[in-house]
Amino acid sequence: PGGASDPGGLPLEARAARMSTELAGPPIYLDADACPVKDETYRVAARYGLVVHVVANSVLNLPREPWIVRVVVGSALDAADDWIAERAGPGSIVLTADVPLAARCVKAGATVLAFTGKPFSESSIGMALATRDLMQSLREAGTITGGPKPFSRADRSAFLSALDRAVNRILRERPRDA
Image (tube, rainbow, N blue to C red; front, side, top):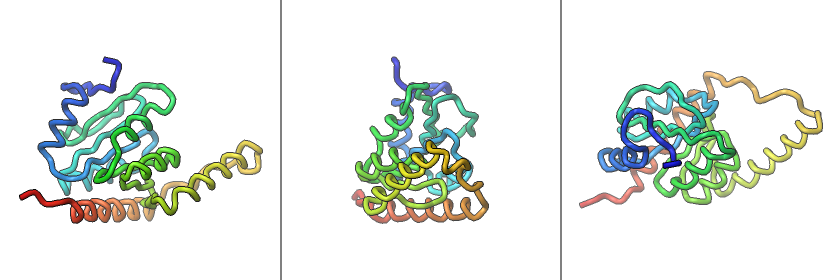
């Protein structure tokens, strides 16, 4: 009660636990609000048999696949970020454009990618946070009035390649069960 739920059946935690034992591979946590690469994420997950946790503040229209877990966290500030950060860790993949969430997940040991395919790492997250804060200050001062450039076909391609590489790296590094 009070936690995230899956409108399609089992309580979220029970469904996620069942899926993680049925499918071997890194779980993917998708920060889905305003995500431009949901379809690309599903394509890679289907190829490797991975579970995708689609985390959002409201119900999104998703494909009905057993490996896609809908996570509706409610409207509290940072609820989606908190849900993802609590579960992210070594062997998991987090997909987000939210730099503070990326920092939390990198610190937890997760592989973190931006929607453009750019990886966040321990060596790059400090600069990403500083750039985010600078841009926010410039927007608040009225110096910058535009948003980010439109998402391009090249961005989608870069994302697909980066996600594929991340999955393969995690699969190679996983200990083999005897």
